[in-house]
Length: 122
Image (tube, rainbow, N blue to C red; front, side, top):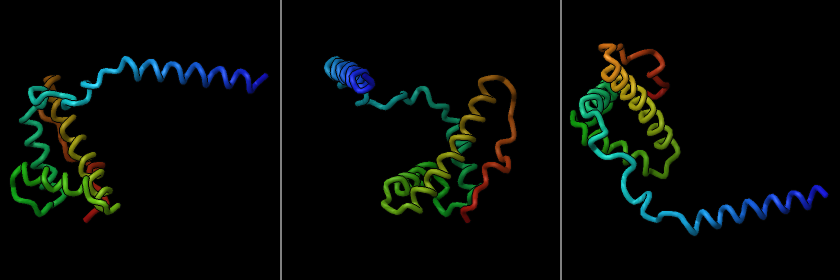
């Protein structure tokens, strides 16, 4: 009896997935999730500069150089590069979100360099 119920459940799940595939919108993920108008450029630049200063990265003092380096780390086949990318991306995202929240809620400037942003990477 249990296997009959399980098979019926799998059949229903399979039918739902097939219907979703048939009616899926193939154009949905062809563009970036957010337009550039949704990015707070001020917070993006500040968070990028603070990430370079905080981690003492040896990249040119330009945001483009930082993100070229980040893309290199992300696309690297080495696991250590991927770990470093994840750490830097998480630190950047934390600072960026703090900046956007403080600007949008009128809370003024909050301290963005708290101890939890530092990691074990040299």
